[in-house]
Image 1 (tube, rainbow, N blue to C red):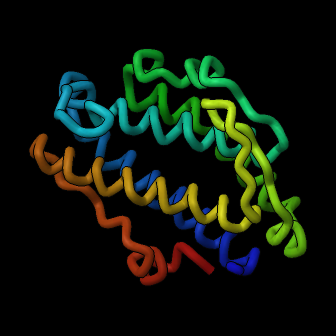
Image 2 (cartoon, rainbow, N blue to C red):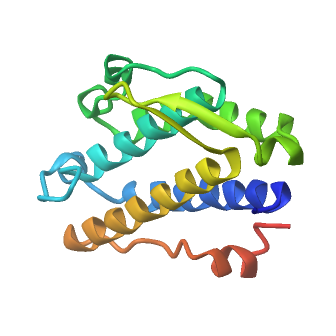
Length: 171
């Protein structure tokens, strides 16, 4: 099991890396931000909207709710046509995640968390595995965004964990 303090640090890193990626995305023209690029989520903007929506979805599940697919429509990419709109919408979600992690106990991490997915199936995992899954998911798509930025002629800032350590971002 991953200790709670390690998970908290990894989430702190996750938000630092996201903010660095936001800085990189700010160099894009509006058309570039929304340009279809043939990725799993078509554009940079679509991929960021996906990350935002999925983080909200998992937060809801951690809080004991299992939103339906229609609830995720609030995070449809068309609702976030600019980097600023995504950044603004992410604030409350980030606060919710940070509040959840602050209130979480070491003992809670090993307890099972059940949720119902969009197909109506019930899945159960220890909470720590789900928390780690979300971090891994965010990292995966940040890599996609870095590739899209390069294809659009932008230079992504480094978001490696050890870079955050060297910059003394993490305690």
